[in-house]
Image 1 (cartoon, rainbow over the protein chains, first blue to last red):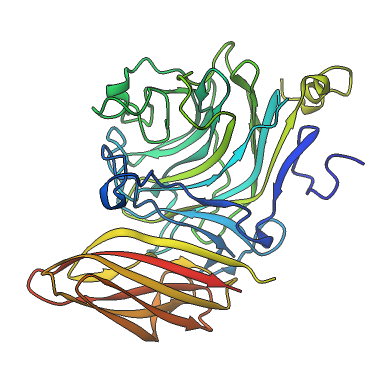
Image 2 (tube, one colour):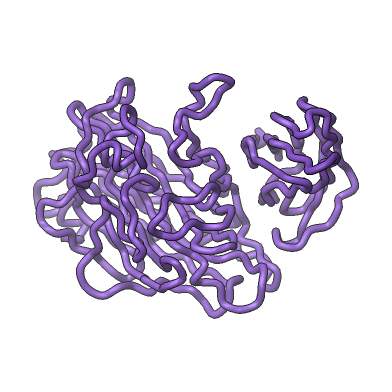
Length: 323
Length: 110
């Protein structure tokens, strides 16, 4: 039996399938990423930025005012992440509600050496006014929260579409930061380690850079965004992480394959208590304006390979074809 | 077996004068219950009158016909059926310069 039996042809999973989520069957364990409510009266622990008001995630039929229902890539429903608004300036911490994040909480398989997260993605700005709203979308991406015996680390990629109204249309990846813990956490010491939660922490710049991101070399990328805010197109996304090296393996979006520089990886922080071998993928979307923006994710497939899978002519590494 | 999903669509969301909760897409569900908690009020006895709204597209909204009222801190609920694809609550808070912090939990089944 092929490992792709039953999956749409978009997907090229590693040999061992961990989860395959088709949102026609429900939320499949994806939910809002919320802070820890451990203070008095269940107050959130984090006070440096507002983590309570991100837009909630939904099952969506992708229905719009003039085109009606798109459905998903295969079926009716996808997972929709939708922001509130407004956005903060891109060199400031994210404004309350300006993001939406969906997390799935898993644990790492014992012998996993490579880990791959694949999905089909579409995005749009809420069609609440005439014209083309593509530049209201600041960014979207995927971050994977991981912890092994020695480190917590969060590899991920972020497509910066627009920053402060200026189109960027290019991908970056989370890389090692030189921030100290207090600078990373907007002044608070004693809880967040530098490099943890790069989707909202770290020093930010006007062009969408952060102190824990590196732009991919070369040209940017224009994902499909049709000539109106009520037409979407599904595009394949695939990020593969080398867990043994705590580094990147490969990234593919649409028709583009991206090459990581040698020896780059996310910040390696000390391990946190109680979350050994955690595996939490997180999709996110960010608005750049005074409008809701949405990221749609369909059929997320998470797969992995063990060391024995990576040898021989039919190995996962060669079959992946991305290096 | 039916599907069930509960979303905290608005968590301790501050409102001043008027209320407009997050427009939530839930066309898969046959029935819904809005659980609304008034966490804090200014003035303390402020009344919050909320109306259920539905929408054909998540952008333009119409009154559904049902609603709920909160007076001071507390919790109420309203049941909704046959609502199409989108739901939210809108309303007003009574009193001079009124403010309210609301948590909205939307329980969906279908």
